[in-house]
Length: 100
Image 1: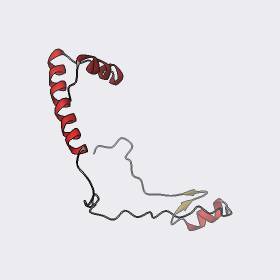
Image 2 (image 1 turned 180 degrees about the horizontal axis):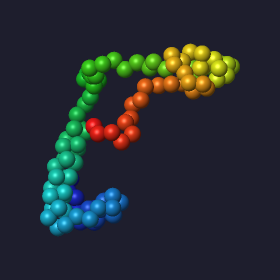
Image 3 (image 1 turned 45 degrees about the horizontal axis):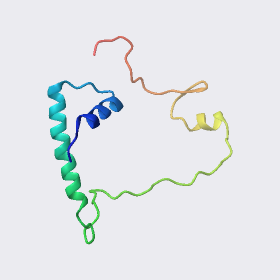
Image 4 (image 1 turned 90 degrees about the vertical axis):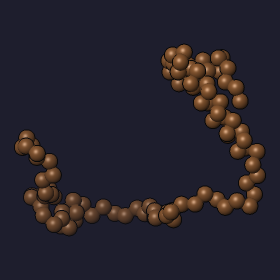
C-alpha cells in the first residue's frame, strides 16, 4: 500500500507530529512495508490454526462482592500486630534526610 503525502499529512496532524523531509521519506517507506505485510497476512485462512498460546494460564481469581457490616475501627486495630493508640504502627520505610 502506498502512503501518499495527503495521508501522511493527515497522520501527522492527528498524532501531532512534525516530521522533517528525511523523516517523512523514512516513515513512508517503513509504513508501506508494514501495511504490505498486514495486507499479506489478512489473506491467510486461520482455520485449523491453534490460538495464540501463553506460558501461564489466565484465570479469573476475583470473587463476587458481598456487602458485610463494618465492625468499626476497634475491630481492625485489634488485629494489628503493633499499634500506637488508635493507629497501626508499621516499620519505617523512608529515611527522612539520612545518607543512603
